[in-house]
Length: 302
Figure: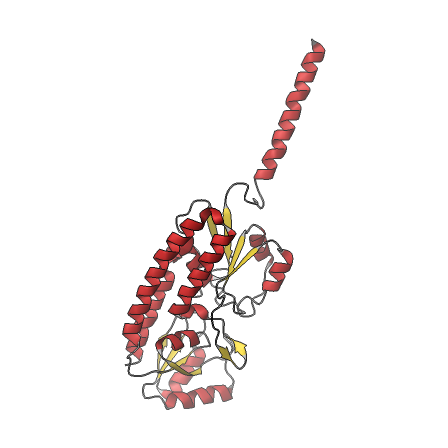
């Protein structure tokens, strides 16, 4: 009897050990899909907004933005330990592409099984001095292509939710098409087409709406222009029939203010939509901000 009781106790103890081991494999760390959740990480804010629209309301899918709310464009961005930890738990990484994520090789090297989703796939890129401009999303036409690219690649990476992705994407693309129509109606016939922007964020926007960027305030964002560059921009602004400058909310306007004092130009703000909180309220950020940009240009270019 005592022997039987001892064997029974050993059996119970073994079961508890095995159960504990099983629990450890399904909680904490990367899930590997064992809890059914498909984890998407986006590289920065424009990709977060697009992906949020495509994944809205889908159970078992999460979206996390890798960079902090005020990071802005990823020019020369250096990956942090926190970023790599975020990516360790990801099933897919949505990037802008077009050279924006210069750190991508490091990510691929360390996360060989991570599915990288390139939003700018097959988009014709603009070049300046031989360098490709990555600010693709500021053309509504290209933002639509990006949304479609993200959707198709998510459907391949996560077939379980393919129909839901497509349904959301169709609804979002319809909103973007309506935005495109509204913006062309507002901007195609503005009387003045020549503009001076803050940095090289708006060539795709300008191409879409027939605007001519004759100069930029800062050649490198966040770097004050040299005296020669400043003088060249002042001369360009003085030639404009309507003297206006466009700054960006992510950068100091001091250089633009200097140009404005020398030329009498009026300063307006255009937002490249690269900063914002990564939460549910971001879902309308692209459309709302593009409409504000539209209204700003309508006023400034009369």
